[in-house]
Image 1 (tube, helix red, strand yellow):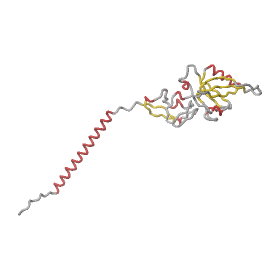
Image 2: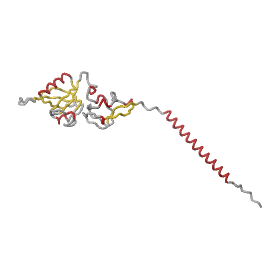
Image 3: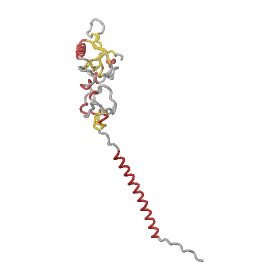
Image 4: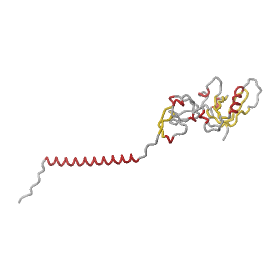
Length: 224
């Protein structure tokens, strides 16, 4: 009785089989990588382009109303053009040295309307002017916020003058800028009190200027 002869595998044959396996595996990996790359390229090609943007001035920290802006308060940031408010500033030097008319949050885009000056009157009626008014009681002035509507009263500041009722010199004026505390940048000066910036007519601004010469001005907050 004879047994069938077993095939003898030489080391060379085994090495060739392993080599063919390795090549086949690497081909599969390469094909998978190429397929993944093709998919990624196709997705990128079909994705919409990023929105156009521009560099604008933003605040580097929270700013209180009346803060005089310095270079450290501002930086340029790239923002989508379609999301920008009208009047957005693009040069930090435009805002440096000017106070803001209302509180600003960190990262907020600064516009011309946020700065005290011609821009602060944007959106108000034609002929409106911004008039500075010194209020005798700085603590009362510190309670106000930009946007408040107030009446301004005048009482004689002349020593030994007869005591009388305060008279109304301006009614329903809007506060554009108000101090946050008694010793803010708005209260700088030799006199006492605090300085407000209000929106009013030219004629009312003239009355306020005349009253400031001889009278002490006070403020009354009006309801809605």
